[in-house]
Length: 103
Image 1 (cartoon, rainbow, N blue to C red):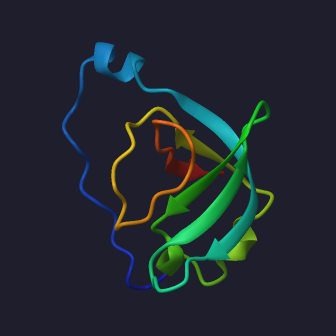
Image 2: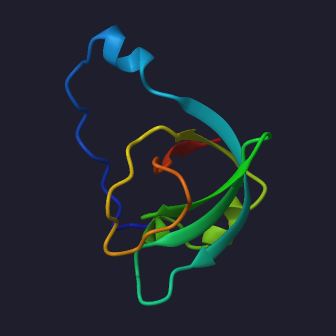
């Protein structure tokens, strides 16, 4: 982890009904690539077993060697509504996966 990394504050508690709507899945990170023109974003190819997705993750500065994530498993929220992400649009569905964490 970079010396400049500072964890975010813990967010307020949510009701279980809100949590129950979140689709969190375990995926295996197949490849990690730099995103041209960005010093923060990485392009991840993630295998969820029944499908693969390409995910932009703003974590390039968090690790000295981001490619060390290849082969690692991580948790992803996969049912967030698609939003514009710095003008970059990837994927073919209405949802934008979000990286939760890795183990």
